Length: 121
Image (tube, rainbow, N blue to C red; front, side):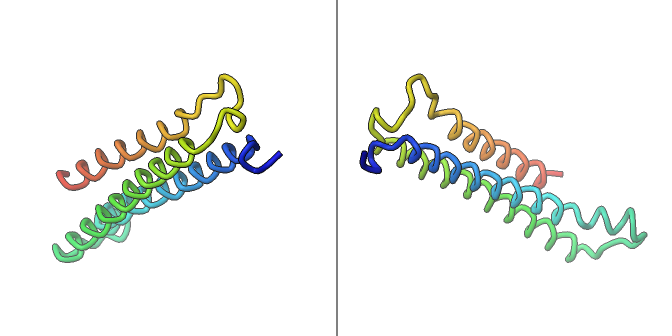
């Protein structure tokens, strides 16, 4: 059996996609925290951040969320590209290969909504 007939190739690609999805979630979460850091300073530290600090935190936070969205999209595209190269021997019968990439696309959509929320709030 060559590596091209090994179903483990599919599962390795799926694990890689899900690792990138976790990375994208982390980037988006960190971006949200950075964007809302001014609120934290106001509530916890009792000090009002300057408008420049608030704007910088918002821009950096939205950029991190955007980077998470890009990571999710690129990982979904890469996974789909790999799946198209696999033959029938590498995909178990009745195995749904689209579920993993669907999660990456859904995460990207959620990230876009989060970025819009941060930008307009």
